[in-house]
Image 1 (tube, rainbow, N blue to C red):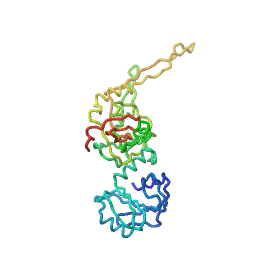
Image 2 (cartoon, helix red, strand yellow; image 1 turned 90 degrees about the vertical axis):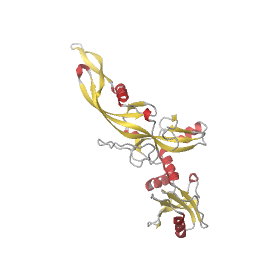
Image 3 (cartoon, rainbow, N blue to C red; image 1 turned 30 degrees about the vertical axis):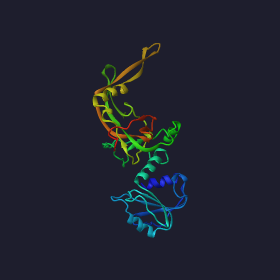
Image 4 (tube, rainbow, N blue to C red; image 1 turned 30 degrees about the horizontal axis):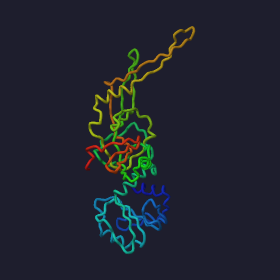
Length: 315
């Protein structure tokens, strides 16, 4: 989390004077002093002391803040915390303090990720992929892959006169299938094949997946899962596989050896669903919840909008 904070500050050209030695006051870790902060941060603009509080089980108490204020230099202070505060506001006669709780921090990092300010390394191909299940509305905290966003939500909203809408970055759950199976051609010839297939329950389609460069590591954002009925059962999935894995091949064969006249024949190779071995892992689409007169989900890949699933409403 701390690396992400530093990366965003660097991207936004916030010049920080880092301390020569590590400085901590209780759980408050001093990151450095910024001579000037961008107006986008809605913070004091000059000479800001930046602090970080790492994650923990208990919220930051008012007493902890008071102990910190006794040792902290007077002036402007920005405290970025991975722990909640058990108070709404802290008043000090010698300190101008801006507090960021985990919700504010996560939204800031999520927006920066989805707007392209910070990018993790592209996911590496691996024969030994890890497959696991994500519970509905779970937050992702491991190196799981998400597609790069293809739209800018602020531009999308502006084009529709929705500039005043509040947006919350999320991830939409999908599945990336590893399919092993056999295709059968003319004269009962067979070949083994291996494919990666993307199941998109939001658009109700499956398609071949070929480009790992479209993937990056997922930030720690809330995951929204589709309604259970939107996933394909095994029989339906296999029927859809036939449509996308059946292929036609052109085979040039000599019709007349003397004249060398060639005819292009099209051979059909059909996927054999009974031969399929299936395994999958979770994969995610970038998205936002748009809060205006109501709430909608905006897909960051295609700009489509969806209603919130019942499993999410009220959570």
